Length: 210
Image (cartoon, rainbow, N blue to C red; front, top):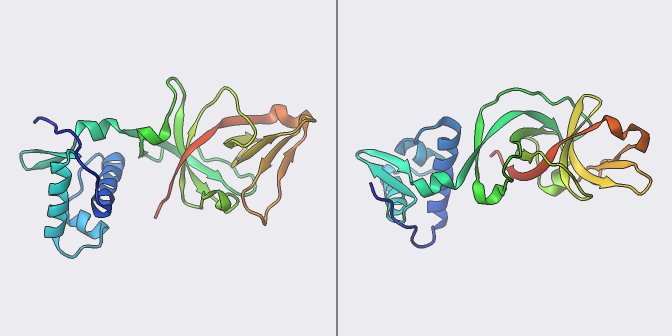
């Protein structure tokens, strides 16, 4: 079936439905049912969902293949599927659990990943980054880097434990891992100990888990 060019802006309800469809498609590799869509949007009438779906088809975000709905090729290419590989602390240092926890879908435009770089997601535990908008239960998308600069939000491993913090390099060679929670103190790694500091990557994006 030919794909129409995207036309017009989405209403808030249309965008909410499209985001939900892309999330389910990314996590479960399937299209949610109309009843699931209605439940996700807290709509009592399936007919209201059908109207929203019709608008998304008309604007080119969804296509029909017989009785089946599909994300348009343009929308599929706009989504990057990122593996969720474990849990990282946003608090005191805590061991990262390296495990295959599935995949999550992010906007390709939002991620702006660089070719050849490893990209993965981690689920956050702890409260140390709340003032940066990173809450417990969120997913952070992390990209491996060759270099880092002060002010980057990074995931690091130190003495076999991992955490997400803001990074600052000091003139004396010390490295500071700064929480974004005014109730918590910096973690200072002395210059003579920085060889034990492993940078896992820079945080590119955060996905709120509602």
